[in-house]
Image 1 (cartoon, each protein chain N blue to C red):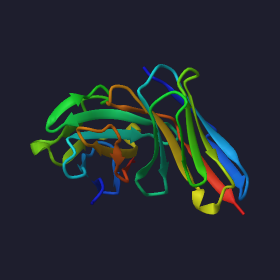
Image 2 (tube, helix red, strand yellow):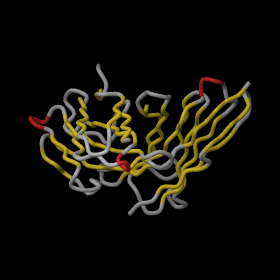
Image 3 (cartoon, rainbow over the protein chains, first blue to last red):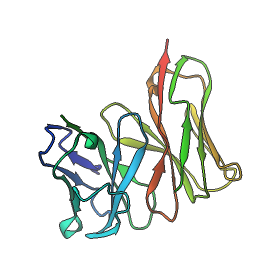
Length: 113
Length: 110
């Protein structure tokens, strides 16, 4: 069974540009989560989808971040415009509706110059 | 907000030695998880601890949970090189978002 995949693995952009990260969860997982780890800090929650609906977006830092999960399958996280403090590793995780264990992707390392 | 403190942040240990990583959390939680991450790879689930006094072991790793002290430990026995990785603890409430510790970067040296 394929795990959680994320694309791209690395992205380097300039301040003010737009970047879109993609996450493909494990097939059949209704729950999809986005997290971010800024260098040296803990991994912090951004938001949680149940199917295509946003269940909890309390961790989204500001309105420059937009997450979508059309059709309840893959999800995208867009940062527009990117700022220096957005640099970090963005993780996606998914879980089945009946269990709580979250399965993580390898992350996307975003560098904003 | 639930806070999770993990220590040490960095751990360099010799092969064959034992050591413990600590994870403290600030308020009650439902579950405690330990994950391992190798560079550039996904976080791999190691253990899920559900109740007070829970102990789980896999190979040279053993995790325990004391919900009264709000403390979990990950004990490494007779370390070997392939245990080198970053280890994270995480707690959850009501099956929703995870709250992570800062991670412990473990290096096992010959």
